Length: 604
Image 1 (cartoon, one colour):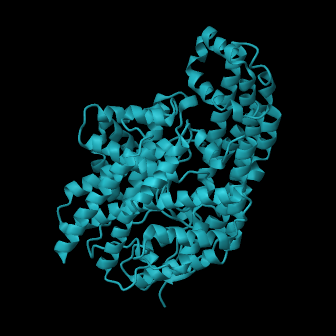
Image 2 (cartoon, one colour; image 1 turned 180 degrees about the vertical axis):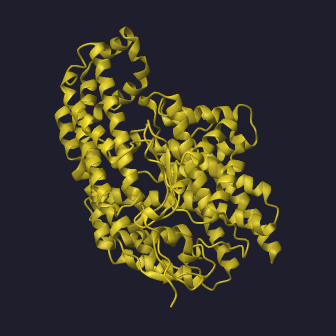
Image 3 (cartoon, rainbow, N blue to C red; image 1 turned 135 degrees about the vertical axis):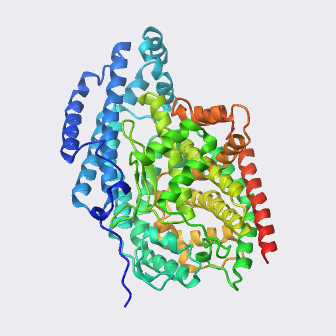
């Protein structure tokens, strides 16, 4: 009998491979003390509530109270969610996270009066506040953002009611997270060495890249079977969350959930529609790549479980985590010495939680608050994909670092629309580095294949998700029930249109929607695709050493939310209201597809 490989328990992971959260709070007791202090601070809300419209001093006092409370809450919440995510089986940190979530709802309710009160101040009076009190000047853009949504904000009492129901509205999302990360049980299957492995989110991604087709098929079918067994539960959680999005938009007088979601960052809906249209026009490129994959793999039928395995033979590149750190520093050198110093600090000061352990949240992300380090969660495996993930998340964290060091708290964060540009610029720079340093045709082919796969996953696949997300929101708004059968039927047809005739219509793919956490994020996924496209333009400018390109890029990283995202990008050198940037990304994809085809033909 072969021994089953099991994930380590949290306390078995070496300390140097874990993030250092003690720099936030030295202990859970210190967290609790700060929790109680914030609760006490909330009791002082009446000192400013109902008074900010009286004069400029009280207006300033109200803004400072709002930001101070929000800053404290974010620090508490980040500590709680990071502690919970490192081991979702830990009852103590489940409790701390639940407390932090409850406090977030309480804070939201306690501060819900602020925006309605600002909007009740006559525009001319509000303007006079800024003229007579110079201390208000830094908050001009912050207030302008608020007043631009004047027609969509309810009365203070109505906003308080909605805020107070926050935990109820988001319950389905939290249920999905617990079910998807802690309670779901995957079977034990055989890996490519014939050894028993416990299937998990992280292991699944690794096995789908296996060169052993039976391993890929087994992983794909067993994972899909697990989700299919819970499809009605997942349909219930997703349907409820979509209804929340639609309801929240309706009561705030928006035409749709999408309109509300994009308005928060002043993103025109045309940006979303343009993405879907340009990607749809270029689906023949994806079909061509998929057909090439079928040809290279030399299979009679191509399945969805064949979409991630490298098609370049034995030239698979693998990196240990230490090797990946060295490669990251070398690859990102075009971004300058100052940028690299921040990357080194991330590695040295334990910003990164590296390896997968039992109960750990799946996937990868960058997280943090204004007064914490910009932490990175990984579930490391020695693959090229994980190197790209590390570089991607590092892009987020360095972006956060620059923003927090150069902006006051009020502008110390940035929209997801901007965030994905920073992370995917890093990915593009890494790709260029590998193509410049690897001369072996087999390795170059592998890197090109990885890029094409990454493009497929980031632009084509995320746009597919965006199209599905918009569809289910529109259907729910019409009163159509989002049953598992209804969503599975549409998803299967959508997947078939995206991948074309070269791919078999595997029935298992129909339920893939059930395991995608981003469908709970409220019009989030499209930004991966727009971000990758913009990053293509920015990385080209940096690598070509265009005059002031790096300076403009670093200024973008330092901008935070000090201006609307579209305007920040225009200053960085990319106009995202124009479809050109997406078309240019498609041109790069086609060019690299041409080179890849040439290398494959020469190999034959």
